[in-house]
Amino acid sequence: MKRIILFLITNLAIMFLMMVVFHVVCAFMGIDPSGAMGGDLQALAIFSLIFGMAGGIISLLLSKTIAKWSVGAQVIDGSEGEAERWLVETVRSLADRANVKMPEVAIYKGDANAFATGAFRNHALVAVSTDIMAQMTREELRAVLGHEMSHVANGDMVTMTLLQGVLNACVIFLSRVVAFMAANAMSNGKGNRRGSSNGIYYLVYYVLQFALGIAASLVVYWYSRRREYAADAGSANLLGSPSSMIAALRRLGNLQPGILPDSIKAMGIAGKHTSLFATHPSLEDRIEALERLQRGI
Image (tube, rainbow, N blue to C red; front, side):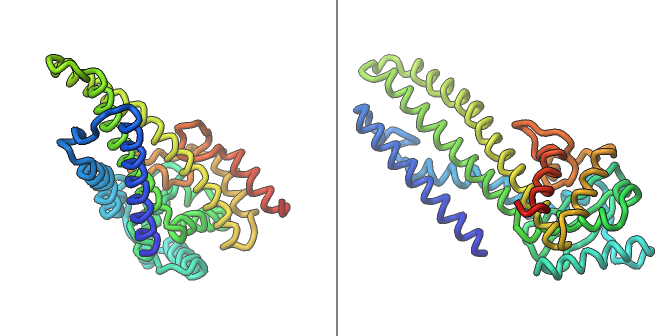
């Protein structure tokens, strides 16, 4: 709850700052800002916030249901067999160490991967693939589960959604106000150019939506990669040593990584290569970070 309240305060502060900057720029350029969004810039800020956040929040609230459906995950309770019982008890032990409530545990058929999701840290879902269970030793798999439980304990699912929502709101707001300013400048003193100014507005708006959308995605991907380093370190902390997580990452490097749906791929464990548009750092970089942690650097 504190995280959400802090986010709301931060987001409102950002929107207020953008409105102030917009008014200052309009005053400097001699533009009347009253024409923006029918004369109500505050309405634009509220619209941007609601429209930018709504989809992400709804997806987050439905994230467990969507995840189960998209990969065909089956929730287990440990009564299915010895391997399932070990899996559930290991997650329970890690949840206790991470000071969060026991999440749902699920298994799905597929190549090596695992993920955590859920709108609330105390009502999460941790799922592993059949292949990662078959290919990893129990200590390696325990490290993977520690990584996912660190995501849960850190509230990463919520933070990713809130970050994306803030950026979406900024993209919508900035695209519209800059497009308005461009159209206003083109039509200033040329009342008969209304159709032309409308064309400029929509051209600038859609170009900025595309360009700022890419920039926002780069920020989200950057944060996602930083979050993976933190979850790796969190697993090392839960297990008492980075060695098992290092071994798990090395094992992943020799396996076919499982492809997850876009809605949950950022929460997966696998990801061999990195780029500006990657949700995960390369395995080599993650191993190097854990080795530095192991050496106490």
